[in-house]
Amino acid sequence: MTTKACELKSEFKEKTKSRPVRMCVVCRGRFDKFALNRFGREGERLVKNNVNGRSFYICSVCLKDEKRLQKSLLKTKINIEELKRCL
Image 1: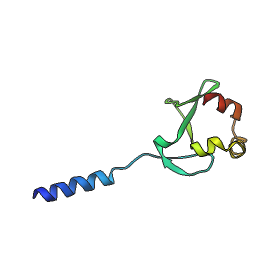
Image 2 (image 1 turned 90 degrees about the vertical axis):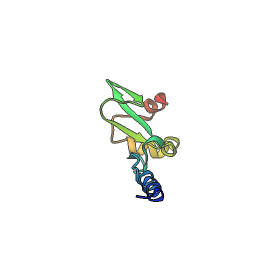
Image 3 (image 1 turned 180 degrees about the vertical axis):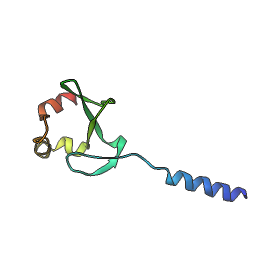
């Protein structure tokens, strides 16, 4: 294989490398994992950037929109005051 072919092959590998994608629970938009805010439970309290167990993601746009956030969190045991304490 020529040097040029090796370079093209390595460029192709870099471009096809997958990035983790997660969904915002409020707007259902799909974003890069690292662009979202991760929340989870530790016992009875809500914690930001929880790494253990089940967690959920909220995008920064939805965190600013209180009305939309309240509507989506009505079905859960989480209230906005608890979420704001984590930020």
